[in-house]
Length: 411
Ligand code: ARG
Image (cartoon, rainbow, N blue to C red; front, side, top):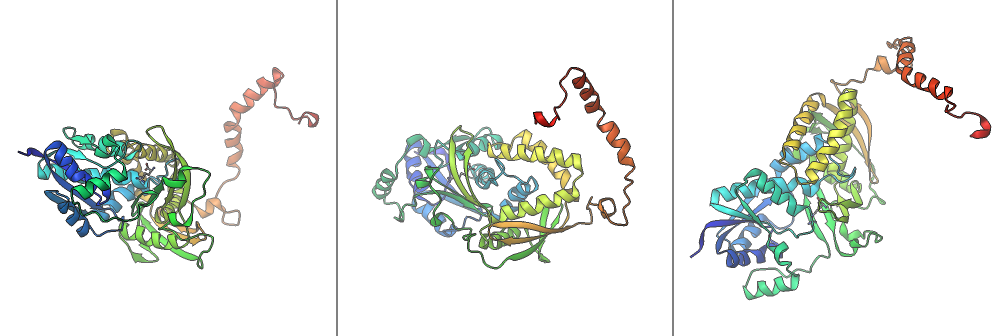
């Protein structure tokens, strides 16, 4: 008799998780509920994935079109935080895991499951993100990882699929491990594991070669409280904004990234990404903040943006620390409204204009022409007092013969 508590499996439709359905059923005696999300990854239709889950023996197949939710609740906070792990990676996979987890837990509650399984290996960040998110959302649930625990090879999986008559399409194995969604695409393994090997053209699919760009593309993005709401005067949802910028910045080869990255599990890995929309939107948003955030608030935000990206990379999406930083970032976005004009061309998104009703840029303070309202005499007293600690310390250095050397023969 089957265990009355079911098991929820994060199901992609691929070989690993298809084999996992009968395997987990045999091993645990539980009925399997397959959960699949559309986060804008493209590829197979979710109807096909749904049917395959059932054909592999799942009792239920739970399908969610989560594209708008992902764009609004996961990509937009990443944009507000200008989130770039190690300065360059816009957290493509890292932000999708907590959303997928939320739906896995929801399905577990709906279908009476006490265990969640995912198909991650034991060497990456994603296993940590799934499991830490699961325990953060529902600490009672158990998480298991059949691929990690069995270290299954592809040949063994195919033989198992044939034995169990699973409807697996025998496609040519891609040499890469790829994870993609509307925020971008991550490509790893294969010959890329030699960090001296340059990427070949076949790894890219969201971007065209920036060396041969079409004519330059000028775009104006309007933001309201940190969220893009119009592109070239047309209303857009967050999802539409990302999709349109993926298309336009992708055509110009913007957002290709090639780095050695520090994983949470301690391994340095070679990673390629392409995130044209994310990179262009972050450049635009960042520049609008330059114009609308007060200096100290902005300095603190830059530090916290970095911490936000590290926490999210490190599987802490649902943590108290990340939640507190979210509250700070949300408050900072109150005046991040206005327009950014950019030129997209040959791999670069360059801001060429900005304007905002809530700008802190004051022409009359900044100008060197007539109309100057800044009292330049006030700088005398400011510099005298601001420089005072340095002046006092320098006098002591001179007294002890440690003054800064300026004699020409010593330089
Ligand atoms: N290294 C990236 C991260 O940890 C991407 C992981 C992508 N996963 C994959 N199976 N290719 O966020």
